[in-house]
Image (tube, rainbow, N blue to C red; front, side):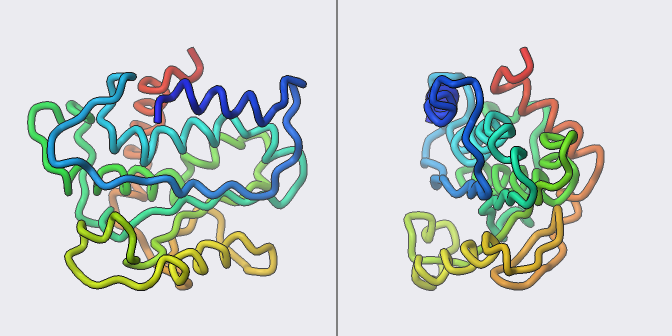
Amino acid sequence: MRTSRVWRRSKHWHGGRGRAPPSDTLVNNAGIAAPERHTLTADGNEIVLQVNFLAHYLLTCLLEPALTSDPGARVVNVSSSLHRTASIQWSDPHRVRRYSRLAAYAQSQLALAAYAQSQLALTVFAADPRVTAVSVHPGVCETELLSLYAINGASAAEGAAHVVQLCDPATEIVNGAYYDRDQRVEPAQAATEDRTVKRLSKLADQLIGHNT
């Protein structure tokens, strides 16, 4: 997904009126498995980093007016337990010099986990802390991503149920928390480091051209 398409969809949501209709929930769920060969998008970003993280980051930023118009909104980032195997290559985030499809996918999931677990997601809503942002590993499910795990998975419906539960206002959730299905757990340490969060925010803004 090109970042320009995210911008256009956001404008469509605003309806050209300059003010977005209220929204109480945003689920950042789009994701792809990394291709065997290193691939860059038309925007010049590594494809998995862009689809799995940068597009979500940009959309969340653009929908801030809709999410903050009323109290109680939730942002749920669908991440993966594979973030625990990841590291972010700050000097080569697009992995041009050394590419591994599993490492590229895991990096995008670590970025998503850090986005909600620490204050990165919350900085988008700095003026209105009533928005709650969390991330969730919905379990290993029978989707096109299953090949990354090399094990059998649950049905996609079972995984979706965990996401829906976190969207339900009746479900108590902790702002910035990471959930493994229906249990709150600690994410990888890298996802909680303030330095990682700040660097990731700066990198994301640079790569998507936000605040420019």
